Each structure stands twice: as structure tokens, then as C-alpha cells.
Amino acid sequence: MATVKADVAARPDAERVGRNDATFRAANERIEKSALAFEFGAERIPFICECADERCTTVIGLTFDEYESIRAVPTHFLNAPGHHVAGGPHVRVVEDRGRYAVVEKLGEAARIVAELDPRRR
Ligand SMILES: [Zn+2]
Image (cartoon, rainbow, N blue to C red; front, side, top):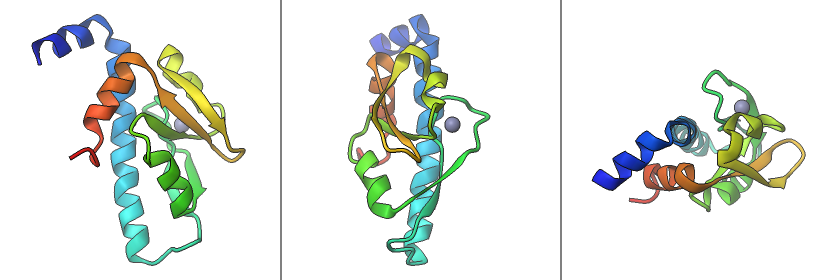
């Protein structure tokens, strides 16, 4: 892990982007689990925007299937429209779905979020 730490120190922004967004993703994992317990089914579940702005509290309603299609890729995140700009050069929009966008983490940020993915274990 020594090389990982050196990498992060050289690019603190990538780490901030990766760690912040992974925190929101972990919160959404819990929201999804509770929603399933209440049998939301095809209804929209209130998920939190997973952009890089740590003050962002935007809630986006997605069905279980919509959120799962994003979560299927460890480097893909749910963002409110336009919120990808907070991720700077560490992200890119892979799909604009109108109400929300699917945003991919790039480079070091991608490596960090993949490592922090709770479904990886
Ligand atoms: Zn946001």
C-alpha cells in the first residue's frame, strides 16, 4: 500500500473526489436497503446526489432498477444534472438520463472508489 499513499499525496484532489463520493454512495446503499424493506418496488426511492461537492444534499428519485444500473459499475455514480462539474477533471458524464446523469470517475479517483466499493467484498 506504500505506493498507493504516495500516489494519493501527489494528487489530493483525486482522493477528495473519490472519498467524498464513495461516502454518499455508502449512504445510498443504506437508503436502498431500507426502501427495499418497505417494498418500494417500482416506485422512486429518494437517493442522495453522489457528486464531489460535500455540501450537496440534492435528492433524486430513482427506481430500484435505475439505481442498480448505475451501481453495477464500481466507478459509476449518480449525479443531479450539471453536478459533475464539482468533480473537475476526475469525472466525466457517461449518460445523461434527464432527471439525473451517470458519471464515471477517472484515473486515481476511479481507483479509490473501486477500492471503497462496499459491494467489492
Ligand atoms: Zn450534487
